[in-house]
Every structure is written in structure tokens, then in C-alpha cells.
Image (cartoon, rainbow, N blue to C red; front, side, top):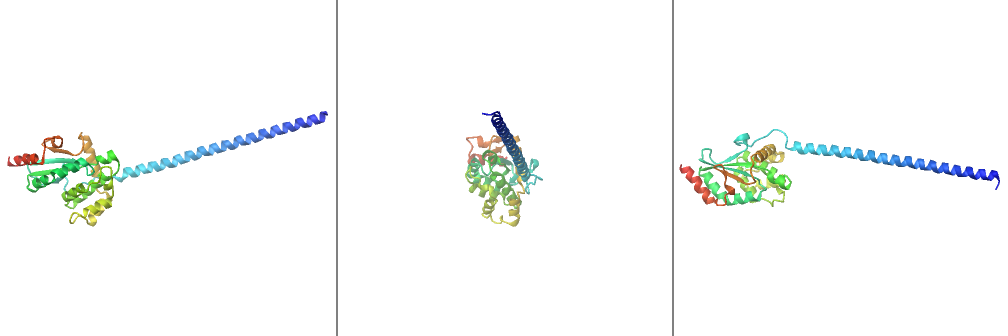
Amino acid sequence: MSEKNRDGKRDARQRLAAEREKQKSAERRRRALIVGGSVVGVLGLAAVIGVIAANAGKDKGSKNAGPVVAPSGAQGKDSLAIPVGKEDAKSTLTVWEDFRCPACQVFETRYRSTLHELTDAGKLRVEYHLVRLIDGNMGGTGSLHSANAAACAQDAGKFRDFHDVLYQNQPRETDDAFADNGKLIDLAGKVKGLDTPAFRACVNDGTHNTWVDRSQKAFASGGFGGTPTVLFGGKNIYQDQSMTPEKLKEMVESADRG
């Protein structure tokens, strides 16, 4: 092989090697651009998600933000108690309850007729505190919405009747049916004169939501064990296994006699 041919082949190999290196460099630049673009895309997506999450958190927080609007006639500290019965009754029963709470329904069903009898006779005053404990335990907003609706019924002077209707139509604890304002308005139809434009607006606007939240905070800070908490003379009679509607009636009537 001549020197000239050897030089030609060597030059060809060098040119081929140079071309391969050029292609490798181009490929490395292309990959760098792809990775860089992916990182930018991921960061951009993360930023968008962060904004959405932040805004969602603000919406969630602001939903119950604003002034605390207590229902008409609410009394006690921070106006958190809805009273049923005469103010000068000699006995007072304090009830902390949640409309989604099955145990609350059991208590109300068992004691309802006795409480009605004693409050109507002017011998007992019941102070209801509405909380949203089950919302926190099970998720959802049924406790909040039903408590707000009950407060709206208080504005209309129909609290006790609507209170009873809610327990008579309580869904399963895991069913957040009371989160639906339409459902609550339909149930209001069972109480004569309650389903009015004012009541509907109060329910749909969540007028008393912040008041319910404040009541929940008071319940939590009170160190109560759960719902219902039923206080008579400072003792939680719901925890008293010997307590019955008949025994409570006897205690109230005894106090009334002095």
C-alpha cells in the first residue's frame, strides 16, 4: 500500500472520528435541553399546583370567615346557648350535641317527650350548644350545615321543632347527607311556617357557620369527652348508667317544688 493511500485512510478515520464526536456532543446538548426543559416544566407545574393549593386553602378558610352571627335569642357566654323553656325555670339542662351523632339521637329519642313536658310546664330550661364533632371525626360538613340550619330555625322561632325533625331524619353517621342544604330545606318543610325565603337564604349563605365553629372551639376547650354531653347540676348525667327519663323528671320536679 502506498504512503498516499495510508495517509488517505488515516484522514478518513480521523474525519469519521471527528464526525462521531460532533454527533455525540450534539446528542449531549439535546439531552441537556430535554432534561432542563423537563425540570422547568416540573417546577412550573409545581408552582401552579402550589398556587391552586394555596387558593383552595384560602377558600376553605374563608368559607367560615367573617363576623360571628349568633342566632336570635342565643344566650350565655359568647351567646353560644340556644334556650328552650322559661327563663325562670328552677332547673337547667345543658346539652352539647351534634346532629350527625348517633348517640345524640338515642338520647333525644329517649328523653324527648320528658324534656318537652318539663319545658312546657315551665319546670325546666334546656340550653342547647351545637357542635360539629362528627365532621372532624368522619369528614364532611353535615354537622356544620345542620347546626347552621337549626340556628336559622331559631331565628324563625322554630328551633325545637326543627331540632326534633333533624334527629328524626338523621342519616347514618358515615352518610354526610346533612351537608346538602337542599336536604335541610326539604326537612324544614316538615315544620309549619319554617320554609320561608329568609330561612332558605340563612341556610344557603351559612349565616351562622362561624357561630357553630366558635361553639365547637368552646366544646373542645371545655374538655368534654364526647357528644352528647348532658349537664344537670354540673354533672354529666348521660354518663350516669342509672339515669332514666323518669329519674330526671323526678329530680326536676323536686327542684321545682323547692
